[in-house]
Length: 180
Image (cartoon, rainbow, N blue to C red; front, side, top):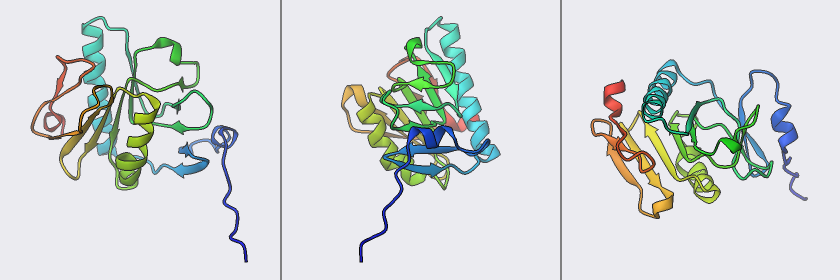
């Protein structure tokens, strides 16, 4: 007896989700996203605010976008993700409804429902798509894992009580424990 065929979802399915339903489209599969906790949202807001303030103070050209922002990683209409924080330095990637192409810097705050995707699937997707830097902020482990893809170096694991520095903005330092 043949195995049942698995449905392959498309961008059309992604954009036609019911109002209020969030999902990501990866390799033809839709992954529903659980609503974030208030703690998760506060952490996303605090980190986004620090980065935004830094960019404004230094008159930078990058923009910070907290979720939900639809990101079409390869600008090919096949993979749609909604990172917790996207920093985009090429204004031509931003349209009136999404980001076409990889952001320069992505930050994911790990939730119980997203742990596996954040640490494995998205880590590979972001690397392949040309994201320059990827942070995984993990409240349950109290650490941030930093991938600096353009430097082609091993990931760095930094405890929440130590400052994390971005390679994109070398004089920007964020100590996660100060935000909690």
